Image (cartoon, rainbow, N blue to C red):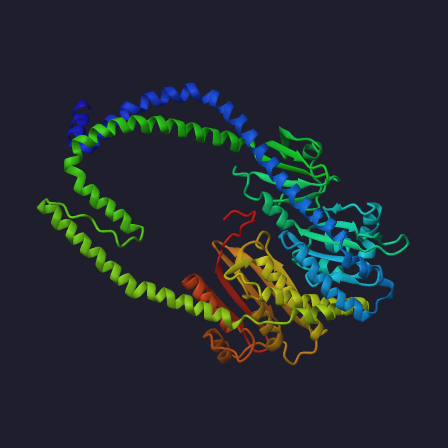
Length: 614
């Protein structure tokens, strides 16, 4: 046994022997230090982590309060505006043309008033005769507002700002259309209400809207996702959960699917309303560190849950880092001695290795200095020549092809970027609301959302939920156009709505099914949209029971022949090929009289807020 060990030692290189000595020199001291400091440091780190998380929650609460206060201050400035007073003091004498003219003025003024509050999604003024402001972003009905109880809340506040949270917009407004939608931005929002008794002072007198006259009510909406941006990612511990709860215990916002908006907050958390600090609690069998901080006006509670297992694990990781620091210190001392001995021998090789590492990162301008020694000079010159040739080859082929592909992708995107006039739609929508024509208003809002989605400047990929929302709007319009001809159904597997897909990848397929598949049909059409995960791929398909395709038509469709009108399935196919290359696959199942199924297979990509693990 001793002979074998001795033979192995003799077979080692000079560097290997130095490394063995360093291991023996550093292993035993680091183990002793680890045992002595581990227990004490664990408690200190847990206490420090609790303080750190609580300070983050308190800081986020401060930012949240400041954002709400800026909105309140903006409404206070509006109260003392002479122009508002002059119009609303003569509201009973105004005609329809006056309402429409002043609606444009107020819409512009409200946008300017909240221009610095990027989290404000929409704002408008309610009166019994007209809604003033830009209401195109939301589905609004007079009956919904009257039945929501919000006007009574604003009146009870007596002109003070009040915040309404923890509610489902579609349910409170009594909109069956919104409740049937798969996705819309403002489902969970926070609303500031304020009864606006406009007034102003001049040098001679004080003017105020008189008692008995109708005082407008200001509605300001902030989306849940914009509130989430304030705290999102602020807690770095794995498995941590952040949420905000209102005075009724309803969840306003959360970054976890376990605590969805409008749901009731567990008593272990809600019991700390009005307090600030941290403690430990157990939820569903798991021990958590709970850090919390309260707002006073409105009465909200911000809280964060961090699994105790994560804190302990992170503590051990930090202990290992300390051990590694000591280990690196001892290694440095030993390595310095070995470096002095071997420098003369290994320096040319180390220089060449360093240059090779820079080249491996894509820096082909790196050139190794040529040493004086004959053998190493020949090796270094050959290496430098090889790097230059590789650089020429890449610049000549790869970069040019890549730029050409990017140019093709931009050109294809430019083909599907229509432009429409929002002001006209806004006026038509307001007249439809004024006339009580909610069906026409819903159609206009659906079209407006489609146009807004089309004109977004974002490119590339979006969450599947947003693409489905666009398809829902398109289906709503087409059902009205082809009333009774077809019905549609979406079946999306659990957890897939937040995965990433390219924009405009579904609507052209749905359009083809309606315009071509159901051509000539009077009733009985069935349209299905479904998605499921298959391993590391996302499988999306659109099926119909329409007239189907001949085999020659199906082959021409698969070949990607361009259509004469519309965005076109061929355009979608070309974009997906450019984006994913060989990772993308398309299948077409069709026969005359048996309908058509278009199947897309894309790489599965998880979105930013997805609760699913890949």
